[in-house]
Amino acid sequence: MHRQPLLKLLRQHRPTDPNEQAMTQATIDFVAQHPDCFERSLLEGHITGSAWIVSPDRQQTLLIHHRKLDRWLQPGGHADGDPDVAAVALREAQEETGLTRLTVIAPPDRNADSEISQTIPIFDVDIHPIPARNEVPEHLHYDIRFLIEADPAEPLGFSEEVRNIQWFSVKTVINYADSESIARLIRKIGKN
Image (cartoon, rainbow, N blue to C red; front, side, top):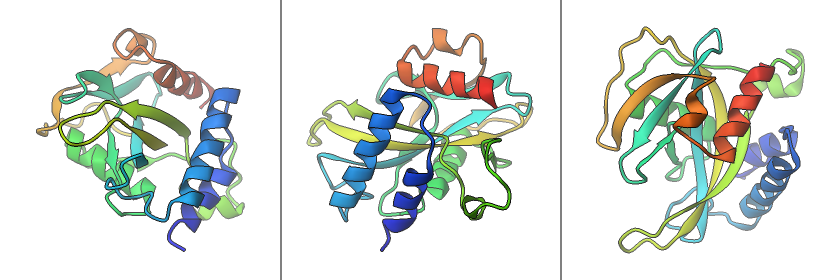
């Protein structure tokens, strides 16, 4: 039963391209097949939650430089058993950035009277490999991403997982986080 809310959100999600559609279907299949999908002890892969943080005018996005992965990424992390992936994304965003005034944004094509207005809609779905580290083998993160708004004037904090935190212009962020995954998020911002 604890997987049903996520499965419902995944089935209601509207991917923007065939690649995201395939990843969404693969994530649905993964969640349906693995009752322990929210646990990092599932070594083949697990559900994670991420926050694509943007400024109110959608001209900036906030990225962290991840210490272990040595890359600029959106904040996010392991569910560690929590099936409320939106709460995971918010918690990770707060822990990794120090921001406290975060607002989840629903995509503009959602009808306020629709059933999904009772839940936080998914912004993006991505599956990506995580390299082996110590006793943990290479595995997949089935990343559920939410659009979150924050004020660039709010002071940032730091965590041990993060080397740096920085607001980037949406137009230049791809120079720092060059991946199709980030490019897709940038394209989606242009539609919001």
